[in-house]
Amino acid sequence: MAHNKKSFIFKKEKTPAYIQSINEPIFFYLLAIFFFHLGHNVIRPYFTLFTNETYGMSSQGSALLYVMPSIMAIVLKLTVPTKLFNGKVIPLFYSVTGASALLLCLQAYADYLSMFIISRILYGAGFYLSMVILDIYLFQKSKEGAAYYYSWLIAVQNIALLIAPLLALEISKVNLALPLAAGAAPLLAASAVMPLRNKTIPILRQVKENEG
Image (cartoon, rainbow, N blue to C red; front, side, top):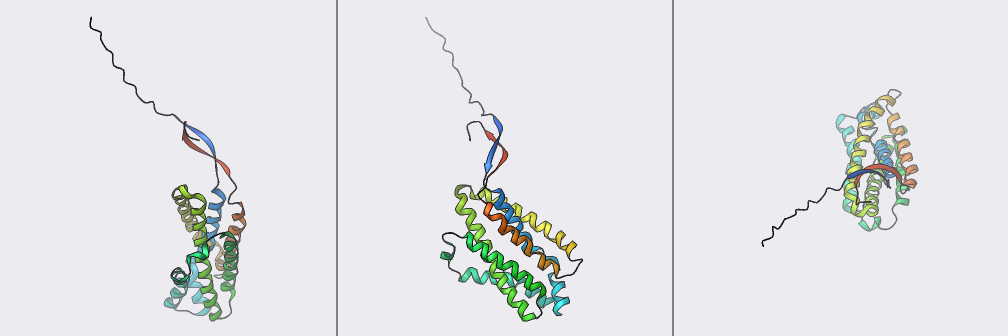
């Protein structure tokens, strides 16, 4: 007698997704990133106006002073050995960021153009070093998740770049030097937040059942 064989097809069920609270150790680091870029960019819309009004600089001269920190960053990238950033880099971040805040205040109230130019050069060095330290810290800390977190870093940086000119618009109504001096405050805030960089906060994220 022939027996009818029944074939069974097993379909793999989709793993349901649900909302779970996950501790993310990145929030305060991103907050430091926000303050860092806010402080460094609040002067951008009014820098040429400030140098023209204060020192009688031409448009070309003001543009050169504006890009001077970027030129300094390129020089340092070509000359500073990478071993400088080995080991613990956060103490260096504190000192460099603090120095950058002081240099911004010096630029705001420098009496002589030569003093302004020197402070601008030193400020560019500080900006480069502290930015590299922040990036290196992220990749050292996150490792496999560095690419994911770096996308958040870029997003927060862009938010700071959008807010900076709005802040500058308001404070420049007092005088054109104030955005430079005001940039020091967010830099100090970045240094104040960085000690909390490893503190986790719970966030809600959609995850699969077999994760976590």
